[in-house]
Amino acid sequence: MGGEPRAQLLPLRILTHNIRYDTNRPVKGEKPWSIRCPLLCAELVYHSLNPAESFICLQEVLYNQLEDIHRALNDAATMRPSWSYIGVGRDDGKRAGEYSPIFYRPATWKLEESKTVWLSETPDRPSRGWDAACNRLVTIGVFRHYETHEKVVVMSTHFDHLGVKSRANSAKLILELVDKYQASVDPSKRVLVLLAGDFNSPPDDAAYQIITAPGSNMADISTLIPKEKRYGNRMTCTSFGGQAAPSIIDFLFWNKNDVCLLHTYVVLENKFDDGIYLSDHRAVIADLTLVIS
Image (cartoon, rainbow, N blue to C red; front, side, top):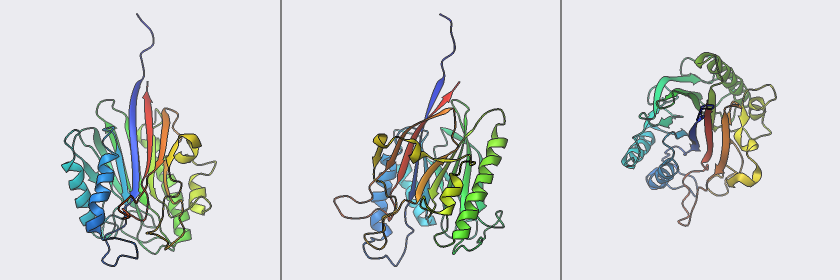
């Protein structure tokens, strides 16, 4: 029988987690990376097994941690294709300093563009912007799905923890990038843009309000999922047990895409029966489906 062709459904999962950098001076309640590493890697492996279209966005990652996580993901990749990543160190554009990498499966996604933009007045090179205490950046990947040929833009970032002006201007710069990619990737239709990270900006902070303002193309996924369908915790940053009040500063944003369905929003736990904190942040996950006509 004839009729309209059925739409294709492309399931996506995006996970973001600030993993806490590998420090040689752990704070009270913090275990060294050698202890946290296998626990955190097990989290990432488990929560990215399905679908194959999963993206993992991380923050505060030093090069040795990047290699540990990459190895663990690929050691576990017996039922799924192996993983690769994009991203550079924020201090020299190579390996020095913290990364905000994006992990993806190259058998599932063709990487069409990989770009690093520093959140500063000189975004094309390693630099510190405005009143920031550190170099800050956003990692950008443009991915084409091999099976459906759909494109998705993924961004992973970590805003400054001290610079109020830096966070606000970083938000404005990223919104400009979102508009640019929306216009250039495929002008004929709306392209899904996902922005993940540690924004050091609770909902009452200027940066968050800029990203989610009425005129912005971006929205906080957590606010679009009904409360009864959210799972887990509310707070995303816990410290290692009492150093600071818990807060909500890790987010998943999207560009309010009208060809995409939102399903879940999850804030995982970061401590279990062994009492070891995986990180001072909790992982945040969202599940979406692209409807391809």
